[in-house]
Length: 360
Image 1 (cartoon, rainbow, N blue to C red):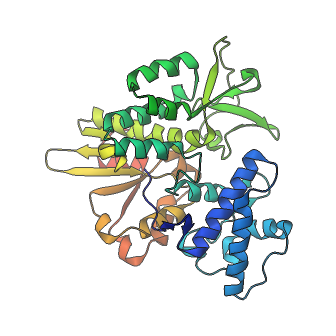
Image 2 (image 1 turned 120 degrees about the vertical axis):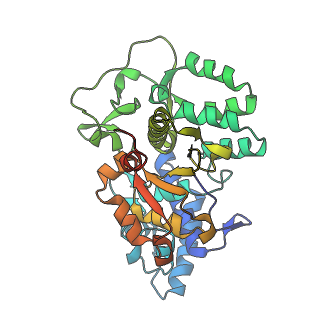
Image 3 (image 1 turned 90 degrees about the vertical axis):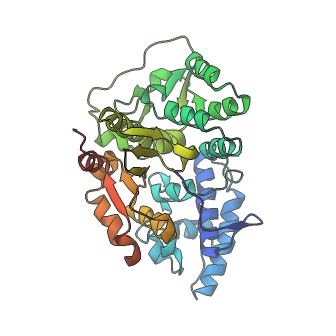
C-alpha cells in the first residue's frame, strides 16, 4: 500500500529542494532509459537544482552530462549534498552502469503521489478514482486480479471477460493501461515463479529488471508459452514489480489466515491497509511493504506521525525479500528513529504465520 508523501508539491515543485532535485533526476533518467532519444526536460531541471544545491553546500557542480552521470553512479552520501539522507539511502546510487536507474530510485519514484506527473503510475490513478467515487469493491476486484500470477500474461479475451465484472468504462480503460501487447511470444519463456515473460539477456533468462524471481524458482527447466492465435498481453513491468509480486504475498497471507479461521478483508477502506485481520476481540492491520532497500522502509516509517503508529498495525516483508536480504527486518529497525523502535512491529511473511498460529 502506498501513502501520501510528506514532501508537498506547490506549483509542480516540491518544497524540499533536495527532494525536488532527486525527483527530477530520477524521473528524467527513467524516461530516458525507457524512451532513449534526447535527454528529457526533467534531467535539465534536475541539473539546475543540483547546481544550486552544490553552491549551497560549497561543492563544484557537474560541468556536463557525462560528469553528472558519473556522480549519480556514486553512493548518494558522496554527492556532497546535505539532506539527502532523510529521503534516500546514503549507500545507494541513482544510476547503475549495467541497467540505468537503480532499484532504490524506482522505489523512490513509486512513492510519489503525483500520477499526473508520472504517467506510468496507473495504479495510483485507479486508487484515486476508486476513492473519489467510493468504489471499494471494484478496487478490491482489480487488485486481486492483478495479484494473480495466472493473469501476468493472458490472451485478450480473458481480460475482456474481466471487464464484464467491472462494468465501469473509466476503470476498464485504466486496467487496460496496466497491460501491453506481447509481440513474438517465442522470444520469451514463462517465469516459473510469477508467470511473467523471461527475456534472454547477457547469457541468462531474466524476469524484469530486478530479476527477483531467479532466486525463488528453478530456472534450469523453464517453459515456453502455449501456442495461440490469440493476441497476448502482459502486465507492464511496473505492474509486475509493484503489484503482482507483493500481491502474490498478500493473497497467500489472506488465504492462509482465512483458512485458519480469521476474518480477513483485502484492501479495506480502498487500500488504507493491505489486509484487515479480525478476531472476536482484536483487529490487526497488515501493511505489506516491498522496498528493495530496508533503509527506504525505515524512511517510510520515520516519516509517519506517532499517531499513525500503533500495536494494531504490522508491517510485513514478503518472504522473497527477506530471503534476498538476510536480516532485512533487523536492518529496518536499526534505521528507525529511537522513538519509533518500540512502536513498530515488522515481520516477514513467515513470521506472521507463526505469530498468528498458522501452519506453514
